[in-house]
Image 1: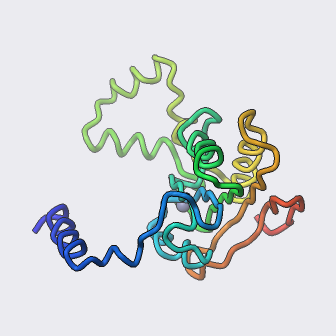
Image 2: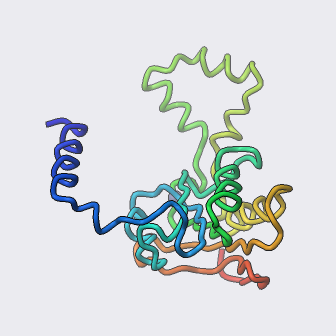
Length: 193
Ligand SMILES: [Zn+2]
């Protein structure tokens, strides 16, 4: 059976057995939190468990690297909506050790794209159109610096209210241990890079 049908079979059983009842909640985060985290597969269950979050506790936004690449992109918009419309009143940026976005090489990604059938001319056309592919695809060199940068982008956003604490954390992808990089209540923690 293919993946979609495996998933749909599971889904039918899940709904029929009313397994969903244990997850019933509403759209407002019970703990008032919005969390921006990495999409790493190791964090699917580990991150909420390690942070003591259950269904309904937080707005969870995920992408590669827990990055905010643009102040007017969809991540920042999600945080703004979470704060103004969904009663989030505290934000955590949670990156992690051993992240795939650390020291990622845009050239490798584009080489793989060509291997998978994307014409070299397409890449050249995008570059000629002024799309900075290398900058767009690059991750970060240092996870702590990346978290600081994301926290600053949120704090300094002209539409983000100043009374929202924004914390910067790094989670260990095996143990779930959290390191505080920025304490959003006002203290900076000097942990290793
Ligand atoms: Zn990651």
